[in-house]
Image (cartoon, rainbow, N blue to C red; front, top):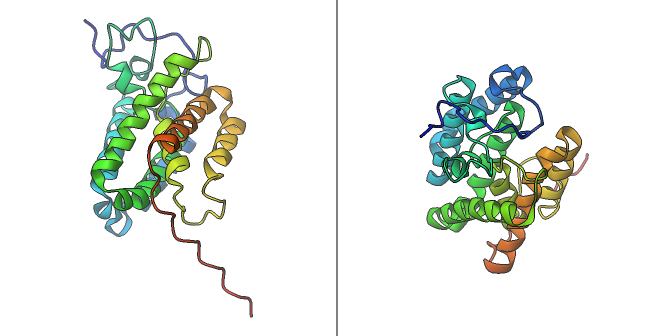
Length: 231
């Protein structure tokens, strides 16, 4: 049987962003990722991350490093309906892989901000269950509701968007109402990268709606501080 490191039987379907560019050649994305990593590392911030958030971000970084170094073929991780039965690792690979470094950098940064707020409020076991459950529901929605050629091959953004909608964290420096934030981000992804990249985000919002119907949301986040009055 083939292995994910050899890239055998790589799917021909369009991947996230619809191009063949890889993380290793995305110069702007690499600069953005370096800035994100510096922000997380600065002052030992990464040591204070809750355990599930730290582990999840570590997995994302490990996969990104393996893809960028050419150790793992990105196309061997994405979903391909014809190959899933014989290559089941794709069901996991598609929720931790990113083709474009710029999108990965933004995703990593937002996951850190979301995890810093939600995991302490929910507790690590429940937060881990929500992250894993959001990935599983995203896969189910993708297979049940979408038909080729509109099925996304990468679902990594889905857990983030589900947590943004259900948990409604207040992100530093963002004054958008928490409930509107995932929709604003979805519009931004659509305008910047097109329909193919926006579909996994939309699936994530659908997962968040499922969570809202089945899982009691966390307590409302504290209100944003009022801006200082002008002299």
